[in-house]
Every structure is written in C-alpha cells, then in structure tokens.
Image (cartoon, rainbow, N blue to C red):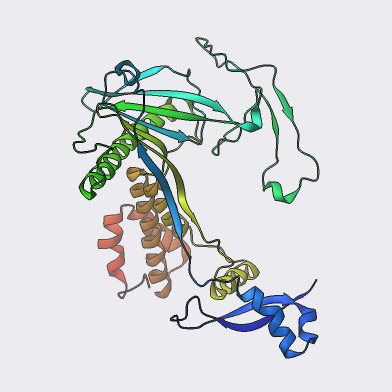
Length: 367
C-alpha cells in the first residue's frame, strides 16, 4: 500500500521544544476529514520519541555463597572473573593454562568451557585431542530451516541440529566459550553485609578493577589463539560479557548481564539529511573515500583494544589524505597524471611529501 508524508511536530516532555518531523501513513488517510486524519495520526505520533528514553549497559547483583567454594576451586587465587565469548575456542574444557606477563612471571590461570546452545540440543560433550589434526563430533546432524523462512526468526537461516557449528561464528549460534580467569587482586572493604555507601563504592571499585585486569589477560589470550590456529575471525572485543566476579577470600560474588553497545530505545530512522545524502551517493555512483573507511576501521580497532592496529590503519589513512592533497595541488599547477605519479614516487616517505612536495604549491591543498 502506498505511503504519503504528513508534516507534524512532537514534544517528548512538556518542557521540550517542539521537533518538526514527517510521519509516513497510508495514502487513504488523506481522503478523510481533518478531525479523522488527526485521530489516525495521533496514535502514530505517540510512538515517536526524539531522544532515547534509556540505555542499559549491564545490570547485576551482589551476594555471598551459603557454602563457599573450596580454596582449590579457585586454584589458590583470591579472584575469579567469568565471561562469555561469542566464539568457540577449540581447546579442552576444563584445561588450565598458566598466564605469564611480559617478563615471564605467572600472574594467573585461564580455564575455558565449550557450551552448546539450545539450537544444538543433544550434542556430544566428549573431550579428545590428536597430535597433528583437529577432531570432530559425530554424527553431525543439521536440521535445515523451513523455506521460505519466517522473517520474524531473524536475518540468519534458523538451522538447528546436533554436533554441528557455524564456520567463522562470531555470535555463538550453536555453541560458545565460557572463560574463567583466576588471579589475585587487592579488594579491601568489600564485605557484602555492609550496605553503607562506602562499602558499595568499594565493591563497585573492586569489580571494576577485577574486570579491567581480566580484559588485560584475555585480550592477549585471543591474540595467541588466533595466531596459533589461524582462526582469523577470533578478535578482541570492544566489550566483554562478564557474568561473574568472585572474591574468594571474603566470599563476595557479583553476578551480572552485560550488553555490548547497550540496549535502549530503538531507532526509527536516521535524519532526512543523511538519508538524502545516502540516496544521492547511490544514484550518482559515488563511493566513500578510502581514507574515510580506514579511519572508521581504525576507530573500530581502538574500541576492541587493538591500539597498534588502530594507529597503523589511521596512519595509512593519513598517507592517503596527504597524497590526495598533493595530487590536487599539482593538478592545479597543470601537471599531468604521469608527472604527478613520478614526483610522488620520488618522495615516498610521509616526511618528504610534507616537507618537499607540499611546498611546491600554494597552501591548503588538503581543503
């Protein structure tokens, strides 16, 4: 059914300034009397917000175990951090790996557990390892989705089955890995029975510190696994799903659900100016400048904690911006593409291009 645009204004609260917008509605509404048009459009406008109502990044609760785990369960350390990865690390469940710092000093242990999801009910759990090749579960029995698939089931084919997994899986579809990290922290004043503001702040600070230390441990673990196995899809995450922090010496546990990126009010649409620019670029065959995409990739790497990668990619983007500016400057002087390329090849380093080539034409070639 055809949709048409109706101009309107909304306020989220009585004290807000009105925001002008366009609402899309069925074309037949236009044929109704004005009071009926208003009656039909008002419920739609009531569904619109001009800013998010909330964003939840995580929530959790503190407590203590009635029967605390034995000292052996935390392997002699006073802190346990448990987190979920959207990948499957194919290492034996329950195996302990000592973690050393850059000086070779052991400062903790990591233990992983492979967990099947409800899409893979009935899958096997045997652990085995061969010297020179990976091993596989059998019998593998995938169950294909109905075709066509109900759109409400999401964008991905809704496979189920047993003893199967999705190749290059970054969402933990059929199974994922739970990581347990054991190490020591200083966490005075975190007694769970004390409900004073000072005690609450101490608990929150201790959890934040333990989580930060756990991330510092697990990031290089993922780097090493990726390097050894060649599993390119295993990358550092911008935010880790920490589900439990336990301080064994004081029997204080924090259990939580973390939400990467947060969950909040769903976006209806991007602003019209962005959509108009989106449409114009597509219609004109225009593509984003490579340096712009590289800068976005650099920011994404920084969010994942890959500082070196972020800097390298950003430097590549900078080199492209410098070369594009020099090309424009030389083109404005009437140089041919062949001449420009020859000059650029003669000055390959960024320093030479900034201190030699860029001085051969008027200022601001990069604007």
